[in-house]
Amino acid sequence: QGPEDFELVLDRYLIVSSGFHKPLFQKGDHEGALFLYDLETNRERDYKFNFPFNPHGIHSVKVKGDTFQIAAINHRPGRDTIEVFNFFPKQMKLLHIKTIENKLFVNLNDLIFYKDAFYITRDHYFANNVGLFIENFARLPLGSIIRWTKDGVKEVASALRFPNGIINNNGDI
Image (cartoon, rainbow, N blue to C red; front, side, top):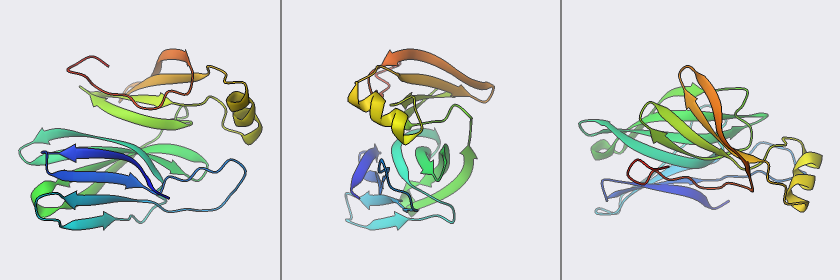
């Protein structure tokens, strides 16, 4: 499985989410990873974790000093989560700090940090294979964008056809 998303930190460190695997009519575990490339020194490193990790969209934000937070959509068996990591670029160190879960985390695709929240695209509505097949075949506009804060999740845009990426363009989402 190839790369799904990437994030460039400090115009030097390229973080790639890879291994996304969500076959329509197959079951089975599949493990992905985050890969880090230092574009100046050509050092590289892969990060695998002691929990099921099947990454999709990722995003980073500087938190303080030389520390960044990286958030990654994770398609765990039977549920989607957001994994949050601290990233220390100079040491090329990635530390998992928490998993965020919510019953509305279904078919997550991409995300961005925005102030104290995440904005997350849900590219489909149905979680079962028959519903997904109908949604895809009929091109039904059932995707959405949700906003997560520590206080809960709220849908902020709906009736979207397969929303994929999301960006923060100087404060405009």
